[in-house]
Length: 221
Image (cartoon, rainbow, N blue to C red; front, side):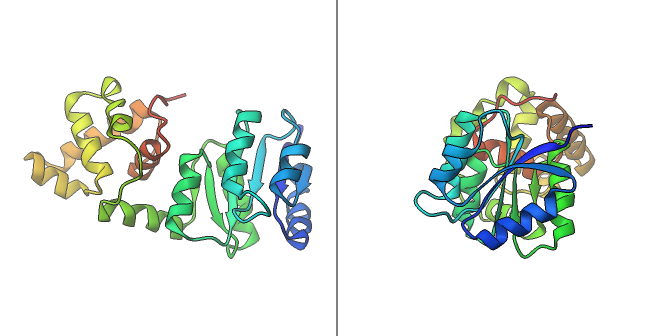
C-alpha cells in the first residue's frame, strides 16, 4: 500500500528536519520548504495529498500560501501547525480552507493521531482551538461572512432546521434554543441530528466552521 504524500512548510530548518523524521515512517515526505516562495515553486501540483504548514513564514504568511496552494492543488488537505493562537489568524485559516489547526506544543503522538483523523475526513483542532471557536460563538463575534452564507443553507434544510442552525451559529446551547422556540431539548437534539446529517458534518462547531468558510454547498459524501 502506497504511503500518503506529504509536503512540509516551516521557516525553521530544525523543525522541518524533526517533522520529516517523525512522519517519514508512515508518510512519504515529497517536499520541504522554508518560505512562501520556495513552497509555491517546489511543491508539485499533484505530488502532495497533505500539506502541513506554519503560519509565520518569510514574505507572505502561511495562510496566504494556503490560499495560493489551494488554487494550484485543490484536492490536497491543508493543516496549520503553529505556535500562533490569535483568534483572527485561526479564523483566517478556517476561511481559507484549512482542514486543521494544531499547536506546536502538542506531543508528537497527538500530531500523528490528528493527521490520520484528517485523512479520514475529520476537521481538526485541539482543545484550545475548540474553546476559542466556541468562545467566539458565545460572544456573538462575527465570522466576517455575509448573512447570505448562512441563508444559502436554507434550500438544504427545513424551515425549523434552518431556524435552529441560525441559533447554533449565534452560540446558543440546546436548552437556550428549546426555551426560545418553546420546544423540548430532545426535539432540538433530533433537529440537530438531521441538520448534521444533511450537511455532512459532525457537530455544532463544524456548522460554525462551515458558515465561516462560506462553503455552504457542502453535503454528505
